Amino acid sequence: MWDSGRVASSEQNQIAYAGKRLASNQQCFWKVQVWDKGGSPSKWSSPARWRRLSPLRLKLQRPSERLGRRASPQAPAYA
Image (tube, helix red, strand yellow):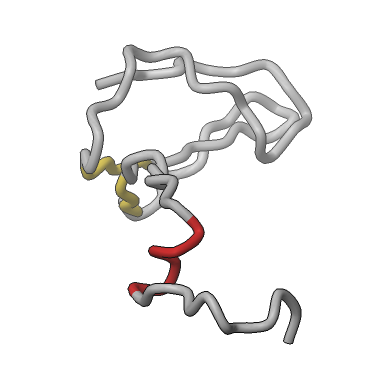
């Protein structure tokens, strides 16, 4: 999928993803490895997983259809 290679940074998170676009509902795995000041690498972490969810899509409705019920003409404007 994507290998960042060694990233020269003191940051521990928020490293930008630079791979190809992920598919909706795609399950992904990641592992990390760090290097100490002497340049020695750590062992790889255990794999962790996450899933890219689809963007939330809302369907706009007429006010009379909100919550699945019709508004009554006699209903007060404010409750």
